[in-house]
View 1 (cartoon, rainbow, N blue to C red):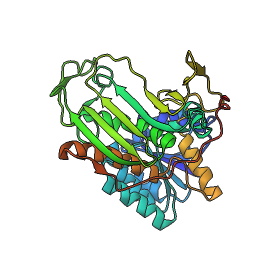
View 2 (view 1 turned 180 degrees about the vertical axis):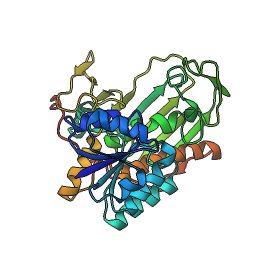
View 3 (view 1 turned 90 degrees about the vertical axis):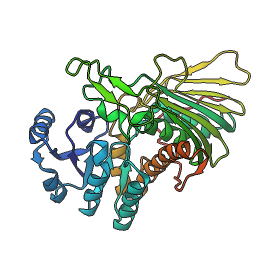
Length: 362
């Protein structure tokens, strides 16, 4: 199937690079609000056609739209693509609120089209190895989990960090999709959330060269804690923060009835994976093998294209992305309401992608 890209920003580079080898798919056109930026990307990666977004949506050669626009435009562009009869795969989040996300999922189903969304890192060798360990019962019954994404924000390295401190962003919406998608892939859908959300700093100071010293007003929570209750009965604590200078905590740990699994950074495709069973005196490190242990962004799109031909749901599906979006929005709503909330969506645990190293036997 032929792919047209809308959005020629920084993230488009890795998709175009991987399209040629790691996660093969055919890119036939690229569009951007800036024709100059689109032309630059097309020349760099040998894309034949540079179009306006409207031309790309109407083009008969485009079967799938890869939506790489800014998050605020995700819902609008994806909806226009679905209405034009195109399959859609987009960057995270699916939309900025569950209502817009539900519109996309419903529209795709009504039109008989496939809808998918990043992140697809959970399909990499690292997290797929963890999935195998859990599915084989190596750590017994998963009982609980902890997950931490702790940093001091992006203004020290990002050239235009303003968006990260506006509603629809912050650490939860920016990085939460990686952690929540990984947890749902490993433990199944979330049933309830209880949230706490604060902002440790009322403004941020940019320290990159071009805008050094400029101040940004913080308008969204920058330290968010979520207690997640899973349908399986497991419980997890997720903390995402832009308020932490330094920390020594794991990315994700899964606590089972027979041992503990230390999960690699869910923003990567590789490992290492660390395992320690009840009787073990030390941790064991497992190095995942396979074709998807390096940066394989686009793997979710490649799987979506395969799913069209195979007549199955894509693993990085719109349904999964909507459930992640619901969990994030419900966390902030729970924090504001001061009570636990039950999610209005659910998701089917994605089928494993059998490309990881065999799990060790007990």
